[in-house]
Image 1 (cartoon, rainbow, N blue to C red):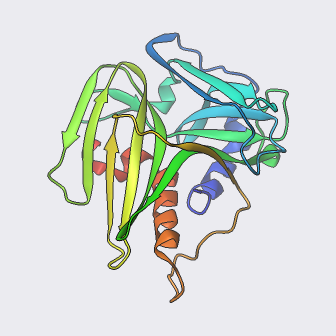
Image 2 (tube, rainbow, N blue to C red):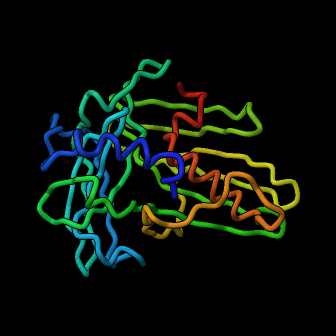
Length: 239
């Protein structure tokens, strides 16, 4: 759900930067993670090829695979391209702007015209007073790293990252009455997430909220912003 902010910038780079294979193979990492799903998410029936990209202005292929009736499996076990890494104040080099894109071709090429949308693993939970959405992100770090900050009421961090690839769960919460938004990032596993496909031509909620916009509409717009700008760009504390 991030094309409102992100896809126009992304498409400008696709034709130049998308490659026909994983040319960013910089050796194995000490911690790998596997992303898998045993079915085709709704709306992804035309997808044939899935690629994981690490971004820093331009996309760099981390790994790619095909999507079949049995779903997909993606193993993140290689160091991202150096151009996809940035240095945070703690001194670590990380890649946190990682996306999973779906394409209509299955020949290992990734072109603008073949891009169909993105895959996200997410969960929405509603209570009497709040609505929250948790999305699973994938971060690489070149060293063990702990980032904890609970001093900000709007943003909280509770991250224990290991050298290699890590799952980071970012939750965006909205209050039904006030529409106040809070966010948190943790490496503690959040269960109950479901893989969804977000087509690039899906309708967007207007940025200006008319009277009939719901709390869920506002929440989804905020989640789009988180995804489009990258997790670390939103959680400024780790920059």
